[in-house]
Length: 340
Image 1 (cartoon, rainbow, N blue to C red):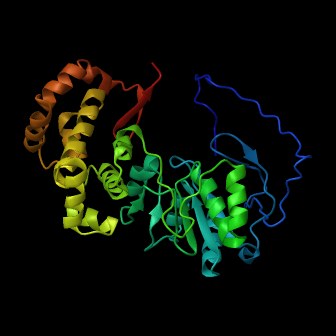
Image 2 (image 1 turned 180 degrees about the vertical axis):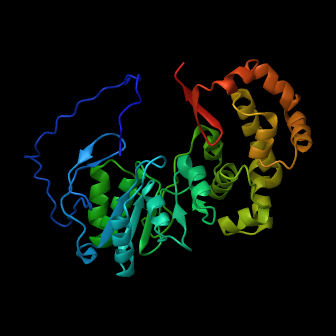
């Protein structure tokens, strides 16, 4: 649900939509049909403020081949009512495929419908997911995951990937290709392989410059597991190769051992956090998975030629005052933006 912008904040961008009638193309649901479902008779208001009227109440789940749960806000309000949760459990028991889009995956997990399954989560919500479901290991390098009667999607543009996937699977590849061409989308995984990789945030963009896809995926896994660094053997297992193969790949591509590269990534991210000034040196050492401050400081100085404390003082002389009155929005300890 959306409560609008916080009091005193004026929108910086205001948009009006005019919905034109589709007459010439004659687009209409012929091979597919869909309905907006809700346990409430009232319109469902999204987090962006758009109100959508329901087409039907929660009836017999067997009327659908797939049921999609679209994500909403994560914090501060009830996410999904008990009637809907019970209905989703009933649908799962009937073998209906459930699809979680963006934080809709959180709703499926809270309902106990993703136990012992892989879950696709956006890199942006990865830390939120780990905090809410510590026993699950999210996948944050794919656009979506198809696990039979469960499909999870990272959200955003990845919802279109899921739609194309369903069209190809249910109607046929020609229909899926036509739809993707109309949407100006590139298709991946057409032969049952991996889906497209998620676009990553700026701190993860370094992985895109590596030609070998296994090295790219290894670096993404490294950067998504800073606080609890993965053992190299576990990292290799996630890629389906041996530790020795992974080491050879890194030596051939980067001229470095994977564990050395991993440590450097953590130290570079630590420096960004120090320069942001929202955390203490000790907090950053813990956040980056170092066992103690001395261990962190030694490696940091070897790489950058300056101690973490000195870097922190130079970058944030007013650190104490800013911690007392923070004016930035942050996520997972990383500064995102400020209104100043």
